[in-house]
Amino acid sequence: MKEHVRIFDTTLRDGEQCPGATMNLEEKLLVARQLARLNVDVIEAGFPIASNDDFTAVSTIAGEISGPEIAGLCRCLPKDIDRGWQAVKNAGKPRLHIFLATSPIHMKYKLKKAKEEILKLAVEMTEYAATLCPNIEFSPEDASRTELSFLAEVTEAVIAAGATTVNIPDTVGYAVPWEYGSVIAYLKKKVKNIGKAVISAHCHNDLGLAVSNSLAAVANGARQVEVAVNGLGERAGNCSLEEIVMAIRTRRDALNVETRIETRELLSASRLISRITGFPVPPNKAIVGANAFRHESGIHQHGMLSHKETYEIMRPEEIGWGAEEIAQSLVLGKHSGHHAFNKRLEDLGYTLSQDELLKALDRFKAVADKKKVVYDEDLHAIVQDVAAVGRKPTYTLEYLSVTSGNQLIPTATVRLRKGKSLRQKAACGDGPVDAVFSAINQITRVQCRLLDYAIRSVTSGSQALGEVTVKIQHKDKVHTGTGVSTDVIEASAKAYLNCLNRIL
Image (cartoon, rainbow, N blue to C red; front, side, top):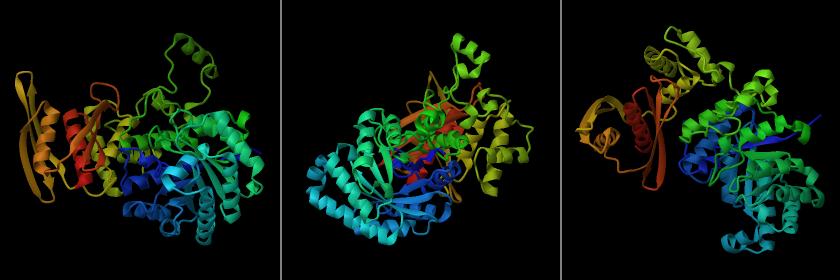
């Protein structure tokens, strides 16, 4: 029987620390539900002491999500651990994840503490955390740049103090696979009580080696890997959940381990994170990119037609790609009824309220009247556009009119609803989108800076839905909004309003 490798997902904690990837409570719940459908072993739901919003998110997820362990991150401080325990204590399977830096550079310049002080603090805080929660994970931060003998000493001490998992972070993505694997092997050999805890790998992708390093750790005895959907995370990101899972599944002959991930949910998870954060998945992204299972070379096509395994090492169906989706065949159309529509949304992983379903159905009918075919990508965009993934918006778009041309000054007239009142303004701009944004700014009176504007076609054809993603900076925070319409100007207005409503 193959050994089980735990999948510890940190999309909601380390992933959300990626600039521009901030999520609200409802979005975090959507992600947590999808992670539960994936059957991850652990969801690191946040850093409870970081803010009231983080605490609320962790405690809400702990109370509502069943199946995975729910973890909260804490520094080695009693107040952090107390706050963390308050957040996760109502989970079916709570976990406290405490961390303390152990590398020379961190001890000297950040913590200003000697080895003896670090060791003492690590033991004391692990012991304290273990009085509250039976499941404790300890992370010696920057472990890959920590002296091996000291790393082993800390590991042995915290296991004796009650740690059930010891995580070995490559915090700055500095390690290379053979080096990182040797660290795990060293600990397995030198730490006398290592059999009482699970060794975990947490690898960052600064050198593009997060997945490779994680696999090296597994090959040398690590039985937990810490990951994020789409590799989301600080700087260059974390180990990609979908990549490590499919690597273990596809090469189980070489690794002799397995995960319990429901791989058919991987594509849905990737798309959900992409839509919530506004970060598009590159077409050539392994496993979940649009081109991951496409072949253009004549030689490859001939091989595929003769026998798929000549150029295909995984079946797209294993990841969630449907045969009809790969072929871009018809899924739904204007003659489809609400039963078929609701069933397809369920198949795509959405759980909507009755009010949200009615709104989504109305939007679907409007799109279907304009398009001959409606694909799954359209449905993802429709749900993202109308479903309640946050609080009720302060402003909604009631009316939009734009005039533009090579001999005209671009002008936009916008009417917004706020509660029962309507406000309308007209403005000029460098182009129609700029004019729309200027008119909206006049109404809302929000001072912000546009950081990024991107548009993509959700599906193919001249009647395709356009999805606009806007990033703005308000004070010291970055906010992301998306809007969807067959009219790109309307989609732009919706995306901009989506951003502003996060502020208001």
